Length: 159
Image (tube, rainbow, N blue to C red; front, side):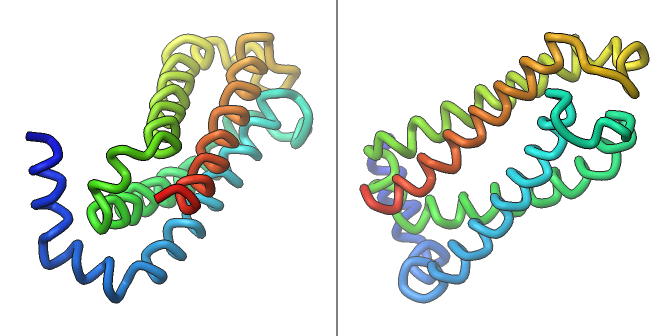
């Protein structure tokens, strides 16, 4: 049932158009927006780790960067979805693709935990050195997103 649905999706006019004509453009936009996602996240994460931007309050930095992160992430999701439908059956059986999706999910869980638990105490460390849970969230985020990027590159060589 899943494979039949993916075959149908891959055969839609939009998927065929992307596959035959628009793939390089869509992939380029995907790579550029993923670079924006990673770049802005890494700046916030290195501040969480206490490595950079220590003269800036964490809330100041994150308020200015995270809107760009979310905009770029939305574009990445859109372009990633378009890339997926262009070769849905190929991606479905692709191990690096599945691992990439898993790491993205774990990055989301890491961010959610940080926002709901660790960030609650930001007033005590906003302009100072972040506590161990905040530093751990930053390190975890960098590792997870680096894995997403690496696996994304790997997908191109295995589909």
